[in-house]
Length: 156
Image (cartoon, rainbow, N blue to C red; front, side, top):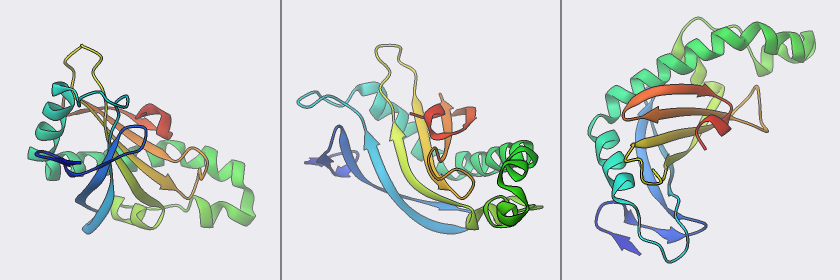
């Protein structure tokens, strides 16, 4: 389908298209995922969430970069202990600035969540990560404010 707001999309357990943004100075292309049941319309709250996020994209991504760095620093010691001396420097190295995360995470999706009638604008950023290849990393925005950073399920 060609959506007037989201562009070209295909249905795969929700509508999926493409989205571009800059992360740590690099332009990235990710899946744009708009969950809905087959045959259902995209919610107006989902459209509003996308428009509001996209209008402030650079600012919100910068906030996400800082929040991910803070999260990484808060969990680093525990991860390094889990990995042991042989793998810690590869999977969870000690870093001193947010840009160094670029080699440890890879953006995969932006998720424009359903509001289920609440009217809330919920957007999730999803990443694969070196320290948790199973659960990855997620950043959840609620009404353009970061409310949680952690494994991907915080944003799903």
